[in-house]
Image (cartoon, rainbow, N blue to C red; front, side, top):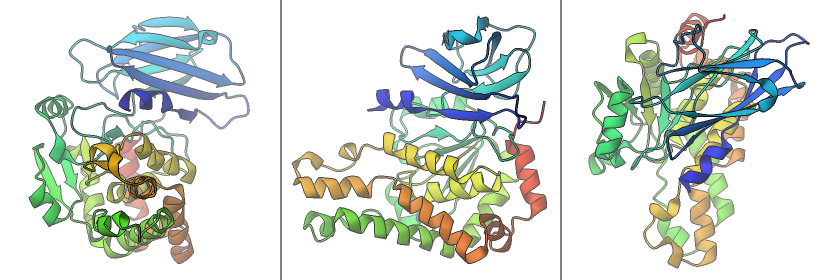
Amino acid sequence: MRGKVFSLLYLALFVSCTKETPLINTVCELIPNGTYLIKWETFPPMKGTVKIYESDRPDSFNLYSPIFELDIEDGYKRVLAMPAATRTYFKLVFNKKYSVITTNRIVPLQGIFNFRDLGGYYSKGNKQLLWGKLYRSGSLALATKHDRRFLDKMGIETVIDLRTERESYSFPNKYKAPQIYNLPLRGNRYDIFFDEILSQKMKRRDILIYDQNVFSFLLENNTDYFIKMFDILLEESNYPVIIFCSLGKDRTAIASTLILAALGVDDETIMEDYLLSNNLINYHSLVQNADLYPFEVQETITALFSAQKETIKYSMELLKDNYGSIENYLEKELKLTHRKREKLKNLLLYPAE
């Protein structure tokens, strides 16, 4: 399953707002053999050259030494990963004028699933989110020795665990970052309905209603924890940061939605990021003997472990209905003032060139 997800990583990047500026679409796939496949398209089509620079850091490139200079019309290039680097970042410069930074969004790990980088998206001010600073993930209780070493090499400083005390006790976090914060969000027990699902009292359509209620509950009853989360993210020394829960699709999704909204990312991009979980969660590996259940039961279990577009859309619309805008919710309920939002942007957005 994981081998299929890399082809789904798309990033639409507006590098300026002038009429003459092209729209640049890039895809960066990490192939299992350690090769990156970088693809690009420009609208309208451009002619000229694209220079590719590489670095093991997401915010520092030697612009005097491109690794390749190609015709823009080539459309793609295969690049070997840097030796000894956990991740390789690329800067593409088109005709010495337009640039974009890219890497693989989904980070393949052995035990940990649904682990991905929140970098690369664009804010409404056309500033790109820094790669390699903020990650969202499923349970770190599944971390293997390989995963722990990999995360150490990535320089992770802080882990924010959104699971309940009961979950943390039953499934201890196996990755020990320098700083670990437990913010046990109230709500979201995806396992409490298994009896109803197995007896077919609960159907697929019921899951959507349940998810919408859960997301509403999370937003309305955890403002204290979300305030603390943003306080952590406002400290530069805390980065890079991992935010995780059990599946990485509900509590982590709400947290990610609030962060991306605070950074000025548009609703459509937030929904696309939310739906990526569907490519990274395999319920067959999480539910024992899943294939032996009747089709209707399997369908309901699939819905329970899936990210539903209607759910995140409902949550964002709920905030807008109750507060006028998500920004108002952030300021009134989470005390995230304009000044704090600007500080967060300075920490997590690439500076203007």
